[in-house]
Length: 406
Image (cartoon, rainbow, N blue to C red; front, side, top):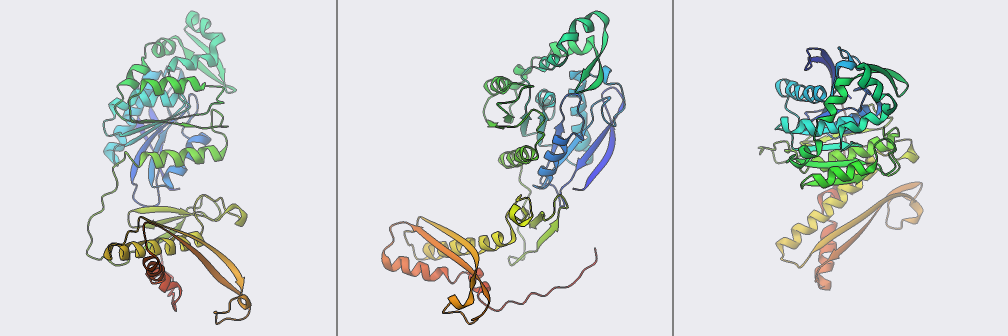
Protein backbone atom coordinates (compact mmCIF):
# COMPACT_ATOMS: atom_id res chain seq x y z
CA UNK A 1 0.00 0.00 0.00
CA UNK A 2 1.33 3.52 -0.69
CA UNK A 3 2.26 5.49 2.40
CA UNK A 4 3.77 8.75 3.54
CA UNK A 5 6.29 8.90 6.37
CA UNK A 6 6.76 12.13 8.30
CA UNK A 7 7.23 13.61 11.77
CA UNK A 8 5.11 15.94 13.87
CA UNK A 9 5.71 17.57 17.24
CA UNK A 10 4.40 15.75 20.29
CA UNK A 11 3.09 17.23 23.51
CA UNK A 12 6.58 17.47 25.04
CA UNK A 13 8.19 18.90 21.90
CA UNK A 14 9.67 15.58 20.74
CA UNK A 15 9.38 14.71 17.07
CA UNK A 16 7.06 11.73 16.68
CA UNK A 17 7.48 9.37 13.72
CA UNK A 18 4.28 8.74 11.77
CA UNK A 19 3.08 6.76 8.76
CA UNK A 20 -0.01 7.62 6.74
CA UNK A 21 -1.19 4.53 4.85
CA UNK A 22 -3.18 5.49 1.78
CA UNK A 23 -5.56 3.64 -0.54
CA UNK A 24 -4.79 3.59 -4.24
CA UNK A 25 -7.36 6.30 -4.94
CA UNK A 26 -8.90 9.21 -3.03
CA UNK A 27 -9.68 8.05 0.55
CA UNK A 28 -13.32 7.72 1.52
CA UNK A 29 -12.31 8.58 5.11
CA UNK A 30 -9.31 9.03 7.41
CA UNK A 31 -8.65 6.97 10.52
CA UNK A 32 -6.29 7.50 13.47
CA UNK A 33 -4.80 4.33 14.99
CA UNK A 34 -3.34 4.07 18.52
CA UNK A 35 -1.07 1.07 19.12
CA UNK A 36 -0.72 -1.11 22.20
CA UNK A 37 1.43 -0.33 25.29
CA UNK A 38 5.21 -0.39 24.52
CA UNK A 39 4.47 -1.54 20.94
CA UNK A 40 4.81 0.90 18.04
CA UNK A 41 3.20 1.94 14.79
CA UNK A 42 4.88 -0.94 12.93
CA UNK A 43 3.68 -3.71 15.22
CA UNK A 44 2.23 -6.53 13.11
CA UNK A 45 -1.39 -5.97 14.16
CA UNK A 46 -1.26 -2.24 13.35
CA UNK A 47 0.31 -2.80 9.93
CA UNK A 48 -2.11 -5.55 8.95
CA UNK A 49 -5.22 -3.71 10.12
CA UNK A 50 -4.06 -0.57 8.30
CA UNK A 51 -3.54 -2.60 5.14
CA UNK A 52 -7.03 -4.06 5.43
CA UNK A 53 -8.60 -0.64 5.90
CA UNK A 54 -6.73 0.98 3.01
CA UNK A 55 -7.87 -1.87 0.78
CA UNK A 56 -11.38 -0.67 1.62
CA UNK A 57 -10.63 2.97 0.87
CA UNK A 58 -9.83 4.24 4.39
CA UNK A 59 -6.52 6.06 4.96
CA UNK A 60 -4.86 5.27 8.32
CA UNK A 61 -2.46 7.42 10.37
CA UNK A 62 -0.37 5.48 12.89
CA UNK A 63 2.56 6.84 14.86
CA UNK A 64 5.05 5.93 17.58
CA UNK A 65 4.37 7.39 21.00
CA UNK A 66 7.23 9.19 22.76
CA UNK A 67 10.37 7.08 23.12
CA UNK A 68 9.04 4.18 21.06
CA UNK A 69 9.98 3.08 17.55
CA UNK A 70 11.48 5.94 15.57
CA UNK A 71 10.04 8.73 17.76
CA UNK A 72 12.21 11.01 19.83
CA UNK A 73 12.05 11.43 23.59
CA UNK A 74 12.26 9.11 26.57
CA UNK A 75 9.59 6.51 27.13
CA UNK A 76 10.04 6.99 30.88
CA UNK A 77 8.78 10.57 30.53
CA UNK A 78 5.56 9.56 28.82
CA UNK A 79 2.26 9.10 30.61
CA UNK A 80 -1.27 8.12 29.72
CA UNK A 81 -2.11 11.83 29.61
CA UNK A 82 0.76 12.55 27.22
CA UNK A 83 -0.42 9.72 24.96
CA UNK A 84 -3.87 11.29 24.84
CA UNK A 85 -2.36 14.69 24.04
CA UNK A 86 -0.24 13.17 21.27
CA UNK A 87 -3.30 11.53 19.72
CA UNK A 88 -5.04 14.90 19.65
CA UNK A 89 -1.96 16.46 18.03
CA UNK A 90 -1.89 13.66 15.44
CA UNK A 91 -5.52 14.43 14.60
CA UNK A 92 -4.62 18.11 14.34
CA UNK A 93 -1.84 17.25 11.89
CA UNK A 94 -4.28 15.28 9.73
CA UNK A 95 -6.78 18.14 9.91
CA UNK A 96 -4.17 20.64 8.72
CA UNK A 97 -2.55 18.51 6.00
CA UNK A 98 -5.34 16.26 4.74
CA UNK A 99 -8.65 15.88 6.55
CA UNK A 100 -9.50 15.31 10.22
CA UNK A 101 -10.02 11.66 11.17
CA UNK A 102 -13.63 10.55 11.25
CA UNK A 103 -12.69 7.10 12.57
CA UNK A 104 -10.60 6.43 15.71
CA UNK A 105 -9.12 2.99 16.42
CA UNK A 106 -7.15 1.85 19.46
CA UNK A 107 -5.53 -1.47 20.39
CA UNK A 108 -5.03 -2.48 24.03
CA UNK A 109 -3.94 0.56 26.09
CA UNK A 110 -4.15 2.49 22.83
CA UNK A 111 -7.86 1.68 22.89
CA UNK A 112 -8.22 3.26 26.32
CA UNK A 113 -6.25 6.30 25.11
CA UNK A 114 -8.41 6.68 22.01
CA UNK A 115 -11.55 6.59 24.16
CA UNK A 116 -10.12 9.34 26.35
CA UNK A 117 -9.00 11.44 23.37
CA UNK A 118 -12.22 11.10 21.35
CA UNK A 119 -13.99 14.08 22.94
CA UNK A 120 -11.14 16.34 21.78
CA UNK A 121 -11.48 15.25 18.13
CA UNK A 122 -14.91 16.63 17.17
CA UNK A 123 -14.84 15.38 13.57
CA UNK A 124 -14.58 11.76 14.73
CA UNK A 125 -17.92 10.01 14.26
CA UNK A 126 -16.94 6.45 15.13
CA UNK A 127 -14.58 4.82 17.65
CA UNK A 128 -13.38 1.21 17.58
CA UNK A 129 -11.44 -0.44 20.40
CA UNK A 130 -9.57 -3.74 20.19
CA UNK A 131 -8.76 -5.62 23.42
CA UNK A 132 -8.93 -2.37 25.38
CA UNK A 133 -8.83 -2.20 29.20
CA UNK A 134 -11.71 -0.44 30.95
CA UNK A 135 -9.21 1.22 33.31
CA UNK A 136 -5.79 2.41 32.09
CA UNK A 137 -4.35 1.33 35.46
CA UNK A 138 -4.91 -2.25 34.28
CA UNK A 139 -1.54 -2.02 32.52
CA UNK A 140 0.25 -2.07 35.87
CA UNK A 141 -0.37 -5.82 36.19
CA UNK A 142 2.46 -6.23 33.67
CA UNK A 143 4.92 -5.06 36.32
CA UNK A 144 2.88 -5.60 39.49
CA UNK A 145 5.89 -7.02 41.37
CA UNK A 146 7.80 -3.75 40.90
CA UNK A 147 5.13 -1.20 41.82
CA UNK A 148 6.36 -0.86 45.40
CA UNK A 149 9.91 -0.26 44.09
CA UNK A 150 8.66 2.37 41.63
CA UNK A 151 6.82 4.15 44.44
CA UNK A 152 9.88 4.03 46.65
CA UNK A 153 12.63 4.79 44.11
CA UNK A 154 10.81 7.05 41.67
CA UNK A 155 12.09 5.21 38.56
CA UNK A 156 12.60 1.50 38.01
CA UNK A 157 13.59 -0.58 34.99
CA UNK A 158 11.07 -3.32 34.23
CA UNK A 159 10.98 -6.02 31.58
CA UNK A 160 7.99 -5.89 29.23
CA UNK A 161 7.71 -8.44 26.41
CA UNK A 162 11.39 -9.22 26.94
CA UNK A 163 12.52 -5.58 26.55
CA UNK A 164 13.69 -3.16 29.26
CA UNK A 165 11.60 -0.05 29.98
CA UNK A 166 11.85 2.59 32.69
CA UNK A 167 8.63 3.30 34.55
CA UNK A 168 8.32 6.39 36.75
CA UNK A 169 6.18 7.15 39.77
CA UNK A 170 4.55 9.91 37.68
CA UNK A 171 3.20 7.27 35.30
CA UNK A 172 1.46 5.44 38.14
CA UNK A 173 0.05 8.69 39.56
CA UNK A 174 -1.21 9.78 36.15
CA UNK A 175 -3.12 6.62 35.21
CA UNK A 176 -4.69 6.51 38.67
CA UNK A 177 -6.30 9.91 38.06
CA UNK A 178 -8.23 8.93 34.93
CA UNK A 179 -11.93 8.11 35.12
CA UNK A 180 -12.19 6.38 31.76
CA UNK A 181 -15.68 4.98 32.30
CA UNK A 182 -16.96 8.49 32.94
CA UNK A 183 -15.52 9.57 29.60
CA UNK A 184 -17.04 6.54 27.86
CA UNK A 185 -20.46 7.44 29.29
CA UNK A 186 -20.13 10.89 27.68
CA UNK A 187 -18.60 9.66 24.42
CA UNK A 188 -21.51 10.62 22.14
CA UNK A 189 -19.94 8.78 19.22
CA UNK A 190 -20.68 5.39 17.69
CA UNK A 191 -18.64 2.73 19.50
CA UNK A 192 -17.48 -0.69 18.34
CA UNK A 193 -15.82 -2.96 20.91
CA UNK A 194 -13.80 -5.92 19.64
CA UNK A 195 -12.43 -8.34 22.23
CA UNK A 196 -11.42 -11.97 22.47
CA UNK A 197 -13.06 -14.08 25.20
CA UNK A 198 -9.75 -15.95 25.51
CA UNK A 199 -7.59 -12.81 25.90
CA UNK A 200 -5.33 -13.63 28.87
CA UNK A 201 -3.73 -10.17 28.94
CA UNK A 202 -6.84 -7.96 29.10
CA UNK A 203 -9.81 -10.04 30.17
CA UNK A 204 -13.18 -9.97 28.42
CA UNK A 205 -14.73 -8.40 31.53
CA UNK A 206 -13.07 -5.13 30.46
CA UNK A 207 -15.13 -5.14 27.26
CA UNK A 208 -18.27 -5.76 29.32
CA UNK A 209 -17.61 -2.72 31.52
CA UNK A 210 -16.94 -0.47 28.50
CA UNK A 211 -20.07 -1.70 26.76
CA UNK A 212 -22.29 -1.14 29.81
CA UNK A 213 -20.88 2.35 30.39
CA UNK A 214 -21.35 3.45 26.77
CA UNK A 215 -24.57 4.81 25.34
CA UNK A 216 -26.00 3.75 22.01
CA UNK A 217 -25.07 3.39 19.23
CA UNK A 218 -22.70 0.70 20.50
CA UNK A 219 -21.75 -2.75 19.21
CA UNK A 220 -19.68 -5.68 20.43
CA UNK A 221 -17.83 -8.24 18.31
CA UNK A 222 -16.26 -11.34 19.86
CA UNK A 223 -12.84 -12.22 18.43
CA UNK A 224 -13.17 -15.87 19.29
CA UNK A 225 -9.83 -17.68 19.36
CA UNK A 226 -7.71 -14.54 18.92
CA UNK A 227 -4.86 -13.66 21.26
CA UNK A 228 -4.28 -10.21 22.74
CA UNK A 229 -1.82 -9.05 20.07
CA UNK A 230 -3.84 -10.51 17.17
CA UNK A 231 -0.82 -12.44 15.98
CA UNK A 232 -2.81 -14.45 13.42
CA UNK A 233 -3.36 -12.77 10.05
CA UNK A 234 -6.90 -14.14 9.83
CA UNK A 235 -7.76 -12.20 13.00
CA UNK A 236 -6.35 -8.86 11.79
CA UNK A 237 -8.03 -9.34 8.41
CA UNK A 238 -11.33 -9.98 10.17
CA UNK A 239 -10.92 -6.94 12.44
CA UNK A 240 -10.20 -4.67 9.46
CA UNK A 241 -13.19 -6.02 7.53
CA UNK A 242 -15.55 -5.62 10.49
CA UNK A 243 -14.38 -2.09 11.34
CA UNK A 244 -14.63 -0.92 7.72
CA UNK A 245 -18.11 -2.39 7.26
CA UNK A 246 -19.39 -1.09 10.60
CA UNK A 247 -17.93 2.40 10.14
CA UNK A 248 -19.68 2.94 6.79
CA UNK A 249 -22.93 3.59 8.66
CA UNK A 250 -21.39 6.53 10.53
CA UNK A 251 -18.83 8.00 8.16
CA UNK A 252 -19.81 10.64 5.66
CA UNK A 253 -19.99 9.06 2.20
CA UNK A 254 -17.90 10.50 -0.58
CA UNK A 255 -19.99 13.11 -2.39
CA UNK A 256 -21.52 11.84 -5.58
CA UNK A 257 -22.60 14.66 -7.85
CA UNK A 258 -24.70 14.42 -10.98
CA UNK A 259 -22.80 13.85 -14.18
CA UNK A 260 -23.69 14.74 -17.70
CA UNK A 261 -22.68 11.34 -19.01
CA UNK A 262 -25.23 8.78 -17.77
CA UNK A 263 -23.68 6.00 -19.82
CA UNK A 264 -20.85 3.65 -18.92
CA UNK A 265 -17.99 4.72 -16.63
CA UNK A 266 -14.45 3.44 -16.34
CA UNK A 267 -13.74 0.36 -14.28
CA UNK A 268 -10.17 0.50 -13.01
CA UNK A 269 -8.52 -2.70 -11.80
CA UNK A 270 -5.10 -2.42 -10.16
CA UNK A 271 -2.84 -4.85 -8.33
CA UNK A 272 -2.48 -4.11 -4.63
CA UNK A 273 0.79 -6.10 -4.43
CA UNK A 274 -0.25 -7.19 -0.93
CA UNK A 275 -0.66 -10.76 -2.15
CA UNK A 276 -0.20 -12.77 -5.32
CA UNK A 277 -3.53 -11.99 -7.00
CA UNK A 278 -5.34 -9.33 -4.94
CA UNK A 279 -6.73 -6.42 -6.96
CA UNK A 280 -8.48 -3.16 -6.19
CA UNK A 281 -11.52 -2.55 -8.38
CA UNK A 282 -12.66 1.08 -8.59
CA UNK A 283 -15.95 2.02 -10.25
CA UNK A 284 -16.70 5.70 -9.76
CA UNK A 285 -17.02 6.19 -5.97
CA UNK A 286 -17.21 2.43 -5.32
CA UNK A 287 -14.25 0.28 -4.26
CA UNK A 288 -14.15 -3.50 -4.34
CA UNK A 289 -11.50 -6.15 -3.81
CA UNK A 290 -10.90 -9.02 -6.23
CA UNK A 291 -8.82 -12.12 -5.58
CA UNK A 292 -8.62 -15.80 -6.40
CA UNK A 293 -9.80 -18.52 -4.01
CA UNK A 294 -7.21 -20.35 -1.96
CA UNK A 295 -7.62 -23.41 -4.20
CA UNK A 296 -6.36 -21.31 -7.13
CA UNK A 297 -3.38 -19.87 -5.24
CA UNK A 298 -5.02 -16.69 -3.95
CA UNK A 299 -5.93 -15.51 -0.45
CA UNK A 300 -9.71 -15.35 -1.05
CA UNK A 301 -9.89 -11.73 0.15
CA UNK A 302 -12.55 -10.93 -2.42
CA UNK A 303 -14.62 -12.42 -5.23
CA UNK A 304 -12.80 -13.95 -8.18
CA UNK A 305 -13.10 -12.77 -11.79
CA UNK A 306 -15.80 -15.30 -12.65
CA UNK A 307 -17.64 -14.38 -9.44
CA UNK A 308 -17.84 -10.78 -10.68
CA UNK A 309 -19.00 -12.02 -14.09
CA UNK A 310 -21.81 -14.03 -12.51
CA UNK A 311 -22.68 -11.13 -10.19
CA UNK A 312 -23.03 -8.83 -13.22
CA UNK A 313 -25.40 -11.23 -14.94
CA UNK A 314 -27.37 -11.88 -11.76
CA UNK A 315 -27.75 -8.20 -10.89
CA UNK A 316 -28.74 -7.29 -14.44
CA UNK A 317 -31.28 -10.14 -14.55
CA UNK A 318 -32.94 -9.09 -11.30
CA UNK A 319 -32.96 -5.38 -12.21
CA UNK A 320 -34.48 -6.04 -15.64
CA UNK A 321 -37.21 -8.17 -14.13
CA UNK A 322 -37.90 -5.51 -11.53
CA UNK A 323 -38.20 -2.77 -14.14
CA UNK A 324 -40.66 -4.85 -16.14
CA UNK A 325 -42.69 -5.76 -13.05
CA UNK A 326 -42.92 -2.10 -12.00
CA UNK A 327 -43.92 -1.01 -15.48
CA UNK A 328 -46.64 -3.67 -15.71
CA UNK A 329 -47.71 -3.37 -12.03
CA UNK A 330 -47.05 -7.07 -11.41
CA UNK A 331 -47.20 -8.39 -7.81
CA UNK A 332 -43.49 -9.30 -7.73
CA UNK A 333 -42.20 -9.02 -4.16
CA UNK A 334 -38.61 -10.21 -4.55
CA UNK A 335 -36.28 -11.79 -7.11
CA UNK A 336 -33.39 -14.08 -6.13
CA UNK A 337 -30.92 -15.14 -8.81
CA UNK A 338 -28.44 -17.94 -8.10
CA UNK A 339 -25.66 -18.57 -10.62
CA UNK A 340 -22.75 -20.93 -11.09
CA UNK A 341 -20.13 -21.37 -13.78
CA UNK A 342 -18.58 -24.62 -14.93
CA UNK A 343 -16.99 -26.28 -17.94
CA UNK A 344 -19.00 -28.88 -19.88
CA UNK A 345 -18.28 -31.14 -22.82
CA UNK A 346 -19.51 -29.56 -26.05
CA UNK A 347 -20.93 -32.91 -27.18
CA UNK A 348 -23.34 -32.80 -24.23
CA UNK A 349 -24.90 -29.52 -25.43
CA UNK A 350 -27.41 -30.31 -28.16
CA UNK A 351 -28.25 -26.67 -28.92
CA UNK A 352 -24.62 -25.45 -29.08
CA UNK A 353 -22.87 -24.81 -32.39
CA UNK A 354 -19.52 -26.04 -31.04
CA UNK A 355 -19.45 -29.83 -30.99
CA UNK A 356 -15.94 -30.63 -29.74
CA UNK A 357 -13.88 -29.75 -26.71
CA UNK A 358 -15.11 -27.95 -23.59
CA UNK A 359 -17.62 -25.09 -23.28
CA UNK A 360 -18.30 -22.50 -20.60
CA UNK A 361 -21.74 -22.97 -19.11
CA UNK A 362 -23.49 -20.53 -16.79
CA UNK A 363 -26.36 -22.01 -14.86
CA UNK A 364 -28.92 -19.49 -13.65
CA UNK A 365 -31.75 -20.21 -11.22
CA UNK A 366 -34.43 -17.54 -10.70
CA UNK A 367 -36.77 -17.55 -7.72
CA UNK A 368 -39.71 -15.13 -7.68
CA UNK A 369 -41.75 -14.22 -4.62
CA UNK A 370 -45.22 -12.74 -4.92
CA UNK A 371 -48.77 -13.59 -5.97
CA UNK A 372 -47.92 -14.10 -9.64
CA UNK A 373 -50.18 -16.07 -11.92
CA UNK A 374 -48.61 -18.59 -14.37
CA UNK A 375 -48.68 -16.17 -17.30
CA UNK A 376 -46.99 -13.39 -15.32
CA UNK A 377 -44.38 -15.87 -14.12
CA UNK A 378 -43.73 -17.05 -17.69
CA UNK A 379 -43.40 -13.51 -19.00
CA UNK A 380 -40.92 -12.53 -16.31
CA UNK A 381 -38.79 -15.57 -17.13
CA UNK A 382 -38.84 -14.50 -20.75
CA UNK A 383 -37.79 -10.96 -19.77
CA UNK A 384 -34.85 -12.36 -17.79
CA UNK A 385 -33.17 -13.44 -21.01
CA UNK A 386 -33.44 -9.88 -22.35
CA UNK A 387 -31.28 -8.22 -19.71
CA UNK A 388 -28.41 -6.24 -21.35
CA UNK A 389 -25.62 -8.29 -19.76
CA UNK A 390 -27.26 -11.52 -20.90
CA UNK A 391 -27.44 -10.19 -24.45
CA UNK A 392 -23.81 -9.03 -24.27
CA UNK A 393 -22.61 -12.45 -23.12
CA UNK A 394 -24.54 -14.24 -25.84
CA UNK A 395 -23.56 -11.91 -28.69
CA UNK A 396 -20.29 -11.31 -30.49
CA UNK A 397 -17.92 -9.34 -28.27
CA UNK A 398 -14.89 -7.38 -29.38
CA UNK A 399 -12.29 -6.43 -26.74
CA UNK A 400 -9.94 -3.69 -27.96
CA UNK A 401 -6.70 -3.68 -25.95
CA UNK A 402 -3.87 -1.13 -26.10
CA UNK A 403 -0.84 -0.37 -23.98
CA UNK A 404 -0.59 2.99 -22.16
CA UNK A 405 2.30 4.66 -20.36
CA UNK A 406 1.94 5.59 -16.68
